[in-house]
Amino acid sequence: MRCKHCSAAHLDEGEFATRKHTLHRCNVCLKQWMHPTAAQGNPLALLSPQLQGDVLHLVFPSSVASMLASEPTWLAQVYAQQRVPCDAEMRSCLSKARGANPLFALRTVHGFELCYRVDGARLQLVIPKGKGLRRTLMEEVHNSLYGAHLGVRKTVAALQHRVWWPDMGKHVATFVRGCSVCQRVKDVNAKQQGLLQPLPVPTHPFQQWTMDFISDLPLVTVGNASFNGVLVLVDKFSKLCRLLPVFKGEGELSAPAVA
Image 1 (cartoon, rainbow, N blue to C red):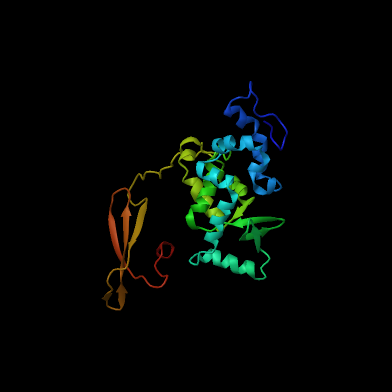
Image 2 (cartoon, rainbow, N blue to C red):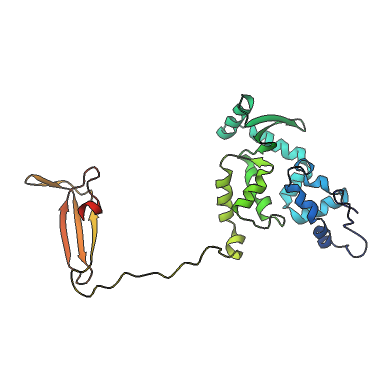
């Protein structure tokens, strides 16, 4: 059997008779899925029919494999969710596509009128938030063997080749941060933090004071002055405590002002 894209023999009776070798030899073809011009966004179009089943079940989760193998069914789900009345985000995108907004457009694919976002020369299918469609796509791009648990930036870039939804970056960041595999396996690539530096220990009384406020107490009037808070001063060496009445007004009570 041969790949229709690179014309290389991927499965012979001898050396490449295992599914593992089949997947390895098809790696170049699978990468073409992320390219904007590759087979109109359908990775299966790059492979011969004999290889499609093996590659789908090796590379993609079962739900996504079924989605890619039956593209009209997947588009039907997107079309149905794009017309859900309670989705305010989708209603806004559809109204912009039907109007004169150049950032959105309606296109008919496999008999379904779908809403797309126009990003330069490419069209990004607007994914509604119902039926877990967004999470399914994030799982496929991030968790699959092809996705290789990339970071937030690369996962967003891979998704934006074909799809889009509002606040995609925030959703992908939350999804990647919650990935259990990444938390267990990935190393921290940030600069190592230094040791904690404690404050110097005082050597005699009244050298260092700490202060804090107790505010929003019942208003108390003494002569011509009114108070509704307490300033607490503590000497760090002797633990001597001093309590001073203060008044909290509109922005009048602050540590710099009292100091």
